[in-house]
Image 1: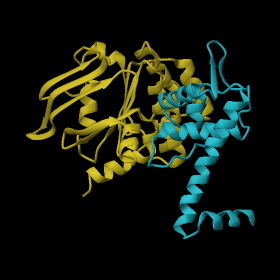
Image 2: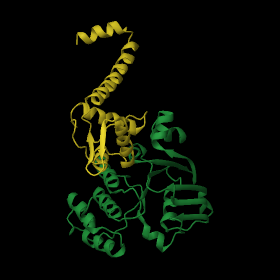
Image 3: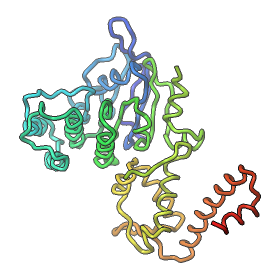
Image 4: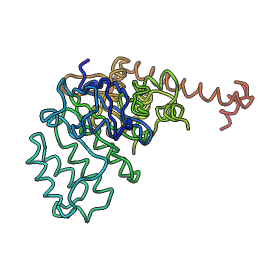
Amino acid sequence: MENILECSNLFKYYSGKPALYNLNVSFPKGKIIGLLGPNGSGKTTLIKIVAGLLTPSSGTVTINGMKPGVETKNMISYLPERQYFSSWMTVNDILTVFNEFYTDFDIARARDMMQRLGITPENKIKTLSKGTKEKVQLVLVMSRRAKLYLLDEPIGGVDPATRDYILNTIITNYNEDSTIIISTHLIYEIEKILDDFVFINRGQIVMGGEVDRVRAERNISIDELFREVFRC
Amino acid sequence: MAWNFTSDRPIYLQLIEHIQADVISGKYAPGVRLPSVRELAAEASVNPNTMQRALSELEESGLLISQRTTGRFVTEDYNILEESKLLLARKIAQEFKQKISKLGYSSKDAIELLKNL
């Protein structure tokens, strides 16, 4: 099967401290994959390298066969851990920015999803609740027709109803040609929407495979497997 | 409402059982068209690929019939429907038998118990 993403012998140091340490992983096309690991395991560092926001200390990354750069950025839709809008902007402003910036942005779809959420486009970002901001960001990211979606902690810090909305937005916007990588430590919630998973710890991939295969072979969920592997 | 899943078995198997139960209970009656993979995946809050796998297996078993252009329908074959019902009933009976035998009931006592419910 063709891979959308390949990382080999990836190292990343922050002032001498390793965040990624000889990480090797490849992800196939057309799957929803969980990048699962405890806090500080290297999830965000890996995602930022793939998104082209950080450069690795050594090793190679290829996205659809290409090194990170302008072309790969056009293929990737990235949801950062933190919100990056200026608070004075309105929802409309942001829609316009996305529409001008990304040729694959489906503004009609984004408007439709915003309307269903009951968000008024004239509202300023600073008037929205934390949960609503998270939803707006996700709607924008999922309204692009990208090859690879990188979602860094999309359900962290929001209530269960908002989580359900976010998970549903992910699966209803996913298409068979794209790949979605979701980083999280909230495994129980996310497990049923995943095809595959990888466990990352201390900057290395320690385990990975198909969710339903683990359940069939070990009779446990990925959440339970995670608790076994990462028992403190 | 999202469907509930237990953690000890593959999700696609649980999807298969859920849809079988929906067919037998008449939520999806014989000859009725099923919602699309995408709609069902959203309803169950699961990965569309996993839902696709469950539906493919149900097609292989004959309970569902796929028509290239119009979608996926519940079979109208009486034998297949009855067989599917029997399979599900057996599974429930087996679970009951296991649980009740742990309480020290013989099959005969268990049958008595059922009769008097």
